[in-house]
Amino acid sequence: MSPSSSPRRVLVTGGASGLGAALAARYAGRGDAVLVTDLAARADVPAGGRYQRLDVTSEPDWSTALDCVLDEFGGLDLLVDDAGVAAGGRVDRLDAAHWRRVVDVDVLGAVHGWPTFVPLFEERGSGHLVSVAGLHEDDVVVPELPA
Image (tube, rainbow, N blue to C red):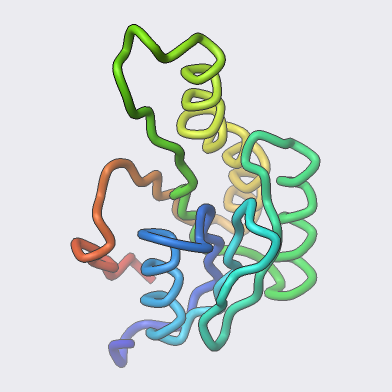
């Protein structure tokens, strides 16, 4: 963490593995309080972090995540939408249910989180939303955000 930065309260979706886990570790490594969320029953959580199961397609799960950040961290500064599923295989063999799942998680999963946390950001006059798509965990760069 740079001397001018202060710890932030961060929620990372899809944080049990891959890029989400790498992002959670980087934020925790800079001293931020991190809520790691995922569908997994449990996850390795970096020091300074906490785990909460979150199905990004479930509005009740988003409400639970909001309660968690309010209870554990007193608020949220950064929501990182990283949860995602991939489509693979021949397009003529993937059915509509498969594509619905991709859209529900990759697009609508983030959309469910925004109305949950944007009012909190507006109330305190600050906050950031980051939606991630198509990066490899080795390409992770944690940007310095305005204080």
